[in-house]
Length: 151
Image (tube, rainbow, N blue to C red; front, side, top):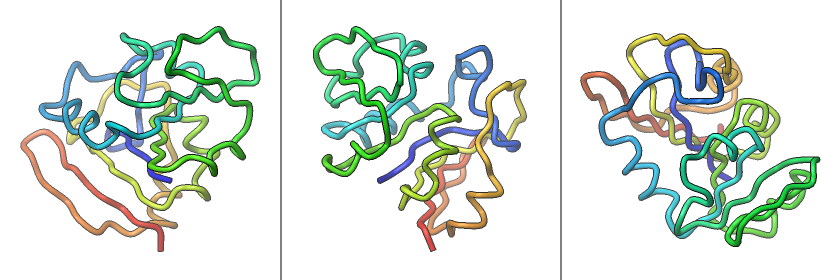
C-alpha cells in the first residue's frame, strides 16, 4: 500500500479540515496522475472535505465506523483488513488514518512544503524517518517531491 500526502516541515497536513496552503504548483495534477485508476482510501473527515465526491477515475474507500450514505464510486469500510483485497491502493488522509497505518504502508509519495503553515492536524514524521528511507527527491522553489520506501 502507498501513502500520498503533502506536509509542512512540522508534519502539518490540515487546518479546520482543509489544506493549510492555497496550492502547491503541480501537486494536484501529480496526485491525480499517480492515483488515477487506483483505489484511494480516506477517513470520513477527508471524505467530507473533498470538493468533488467521489474522486473520479478511482474507487473511493471511506474508513468509518459510522454508517454513511455514499454515491456510486465510493464504499464505506469499517476496518483496515479490507485493504488486502484491492490492488494499487493509496492512502490519502487524514492524519488519524495515516498514523494508524504506518505498518501497512510500503511506499510514500510525499510533497513537503518549504514554508510552515498553521495546522491542527499532523502526521508523525518521526515514524516516517524511523521506518522509511528516502529514495528520491525533486526540488522546487516552494516544495520538494520525495519518495520514501520501507526499510
